[in-house]
Length: 243
Image (cartoon, rainbow, N blue to C red; front, side, top):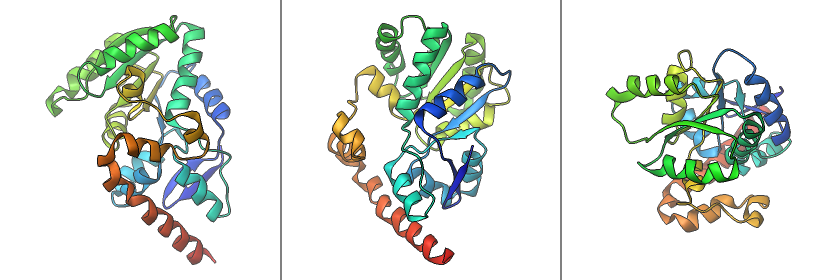
């Protein structure tokens, strides 16, 4: 898969359909594959944390979750094929797993959210086996127990909703021991599936304004949104330096 380097982060130039096809092959393997879903904010954080940047770049597939990455790729004269949101990718995989009768473990978010997500997802994907859940409000000393629970559940897919970079760090730390075929950081997707957070209407999704709809729902995110103009400024500087 062709990669585009955006401020140090390697992003796969891939469509949603291609990403799902690649992931399907991972389920035939015998190791845990990691899928990362960085956006502009995550890349900016990774620029300040070389270890985290290495973790992102070590993922088997790095999909462009964020309209800022699409704009950046155009500025850098290496346009990405399209934006591939983490939740769209995850739901495409869930549909595949449903058709194959495979299994899923949901890990993260507030207590009770994963269980509610299972309840809702089971109605949409009745042939998926949801083999376990665990909340994301745990102590570091509980990690070994959590890994054991995940492995005992023998799920095909592990969805980790701890927020970035915690979710990527967890997957990377234990990927050599996790008894799953694919592990992906899904951020706020569990809350969407549980019904506690509403996803933006299609208009906002297609116009790249999903971030704005999220800001309306969660005004406290405005401090995080301030990083986006800085991201674009750094991309412009990168292009100028390359000339």
